[in-house]
Image (cartoon, rainbow, N blue to C red; front, side, top):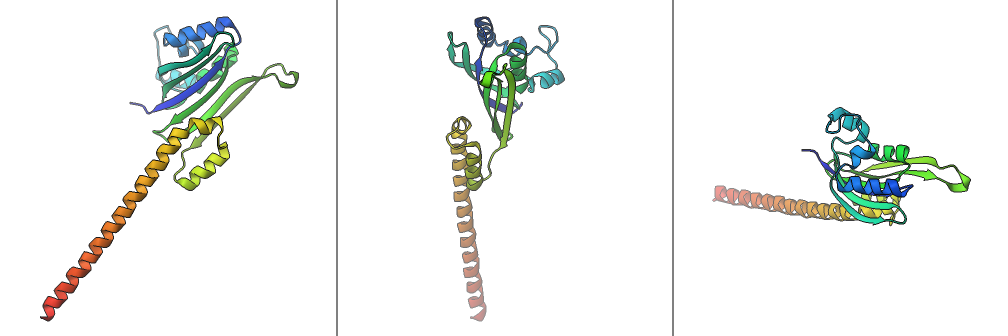
Length: 208
């Protein structure tokens, strides 16, 4: 069984037709195959091809449509993918269908998370040049690293907010580990005291 990567993605479609097609494919669990086909027969699947095209070996699972707007042609979803985020799917959605993608991911099994964007830049009269951004970070190992990491990505940023529950879980885990270490140290001290007491008693018995 794979580690499951948690994902949250927002799509902005360029037309009503593409928007409706995307919604339809998400609801029918054919989203990957529709917008990032593997080039196989309709029922075909190949591990190496899927990993190469999608950047994950299987289609999305446990997909929830959190919000959609029929006027703005936007769709927000959450889902799980095997081992890694489906960045290959996002790339092809933007390249071939002009769908803008902003996505966040968190993979607790291998301890990494990040944010990726596939958008079109129309600023300063630009012609919609495609901008690709993919930021991946490793989990912190202690409170100091967590503070430095949050400062790096921006405390209160969208990515920081997305990872909020993970930050809480990590802090609780570190606190539990610290308590356990303290208990083990106390137990070691008690055992040493007991050994010292037994040694004193043995010496007393030898002298008497």
